[in-house]
Image (cartoon, rainbow, N blue to C red; front, side, top):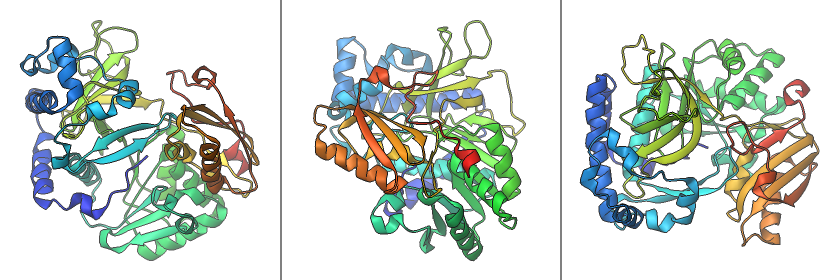
Length: 455
C-alpha cells in the first residue's frame, strides 16, 4: 500500500535539496564508497537507537553489546533479528523517547499478507522517501512538477462520496488520481476522459491495476493513450503484465520494490537493472538454502540464491528498525553488472508479492481488497476467498478484542468495495487454516473465479 503524502509532509525544502544532492552523487559511488557511506549512517542510527529506544537499550544490555561493537556491515549479525511479531508486541518500547523531535506519524499496514502491523515514520524518513522516488522517476525522464497520473485507493477510501469518484485532480502537485476501487468497463471511459483532459506524462500504479486497465483499453479499442513511462510498485510485475502494459502505452515500465516500514528499496533503471538502493537502507539477504549470505546475497558456495530480505533503516529516528525481517524474498545474481554504470547490487526478481483480484457482480475488478484488514485493528490475520462474483468468504484470526461490531465494520468496508449484491460470510479460524504461498506468507485474496477471462 502506498502512503498518501500531504504537501505538509515535505515542507522541508532545505532537507530535501540537501539529500537530493547527496543521492545524485551516491548513485555513482563505487562499491567501496557505498559501503563506507552505509557504515557511517549505520553507526549513527545504532548510537541513536541505544540512547533513545528502550527496546534496543534493553536488548543490547542483555547480550552485552555496545554501540561501538557495530562499526562495520559485517557486525550487523551481532544484533538479533527484529520480527513483525516483536514489532507488534513491543511497539511502545521501539518508539524513541525523543520521537516528538522528528514529528512521527503512526502507520498501519497489512501489505498483501493480511497481518496488521503498526509502526512509526517521521520527517527524515518522509524526506528520504520523496528524494528516493524523485531520483527513480528522474531515471525515466521525470522532472519535478511534470503532470502525472496515479491509480490510488487510499484517497478514495476516505468517505463514501470520494469512493464514488472516478478521478480527482490535484492542481498544486499536477497529480491526477484515478480510483482503482472502481475499475470496470464503465469507469475506464471516465479514466480515459480525465487522462485526455489533463494530459499526464507518466502513470503509476500496482501492476495488477495497470494490467487490467491495459486489458480494458485493448478490449474497448482505445489506442490514443500513451505516456513517457509507467511506474509499477507494490506487487510482483510478472512478464505478461509488463508486456501488455508496455504495448498499451508505448513506453517502458519502470518497476520498483519497497515497503512502508522504509528499510529497503529496489528500483529499475533504463537498462532494466533492478538495483538495491544502498543509500536508502541496508539490505541483508539470507539464502533460503540456509547458507549464510554476505550483504549482496552471495552464499559461501559462490552462487546466486533466492534470499530472504532483512532490512535496516538509516533515516527513521522515531522508530529505527534494525535487522527487520521484511518477509519478502528476492532472486540475486551477485556477479551481474548493469550497463547503466551504477554499482548498486542487482536482483533478478522480487518474489512472492502478488495478490489475486476480486470480481464484483457489476463487473468491477477490485485490486486492493487487502486494504480492508488495515481498517480493522482487531484482526490479527485475514484472508478473502471468492468462489463466484456474488459470494465471498472471509477467514479471520481474531484478536481477543474482536467483537460483533468489529465484524460488522469489516463487512461494511468490504461491502463498500464489492457492492451490496455480493454476500459476505465471516468465519473465525486459526492461523494454520489460512492458505499460504510457497514462501509461507498468507495469501490475502484467493480467487477461484477466472476474472481475467470473465471481463
